[in-house]
Image (tube, rainbow, N blue to C red; front, side):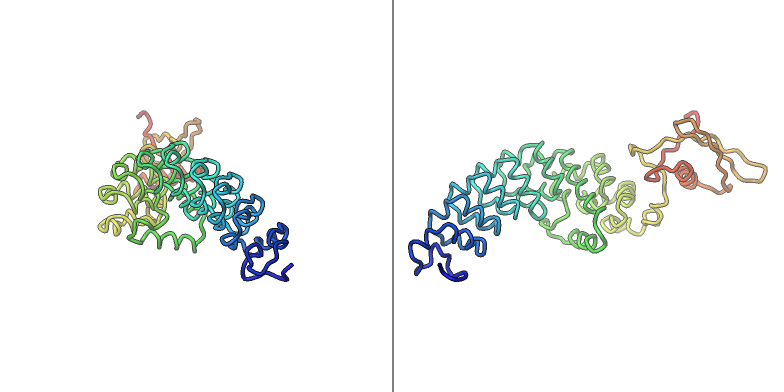
Length: 335
């Protein structure tokens, strides 16, 4: 046997004797060290399942040098995409249409870009696209147009990026913001950017999207970015969203992150506790007494200065009842 790895694989090394050229044990070790040498291997090696598996385990790109029968083998392709999802491009059409293989590829590719190489039927499959964007919101870019216009699919993609943002540390958040500031439509972290234009202009849909992920404001329609109420929802969700609002709103005092954070009044349609508020009464000490009661019937008397606002009341109610999320709906007694 040749001592140590050669420049060429043993199987095709010009000076290698026949007994070495056909020694599977030698080839097995050789392909572990130099998986890309499958490219110049003998055809029988490129068709040998165990040897090809050995190659793709150490370099997914080696799949492109395998014989057609191996590139059509689900086990080999699955092993390759586990190493690098983009290896899906080298698989046969049947494997590109296999949901298990494609989903594995998406999970092991940057921003889910392996979905670009999936079969058309999968890109049109609403249920499957929902699975894909739940792992990588940016993969919506490669879905069929019908899925890009589906509110549930787009919201799932936006929600995934919201989770990514919440889990990110300071460095990753800075990188995400840098991506969003780019003008190219091909930059990452912009699931909403791949949605249908009609959805981006739909106020009701955008309200839901911005409550999930304020930075989706980056790709909203002009009317949305000029809407004070919608920008408020975006900033409440993600304070950094303010820089993507219309310029005239960026200096609005009531839209500044600290002011928005102190506002505990839930917007219409937001899931939050409902608290019944009685008519304020003037106490002997000159303060205002307000009796409040959540839906469980517990009644509490709160005291405020005469100049207190509805916002002050909401803050006090949320603190009194330990409301998770800090938002409440205030309902006037008898309303």
